[in-house]
Image (cartoon, rainbow, N blue to C red; front, side, top):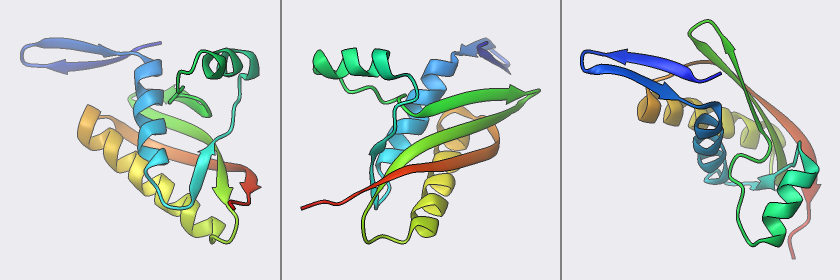
Length: 119
């Protein structure tokens, strides 16, 4: 269900896929995050085979009235403090969505699905 923003010039519909891409892109900028964990394996696997990066992978968007709730599924780097990485992801994603899109973000849940050792 697209989110509808109303301005003096008219209305703007923002699709959940757009919100997910912006959130995924913001999360990937955070230190200690290796990547996003796939929640829809086949679709993401095909995108990888085609050489496309799926920025919405591991992001689920829900609406509660005017508020947006996000669930992010991530993989963090070994040796980083998981709670700090998760907190940074929450702060960055919430800030970016509020500033770029003008959304009211209520919750950003970060689910750590794995730890990757980088060589």
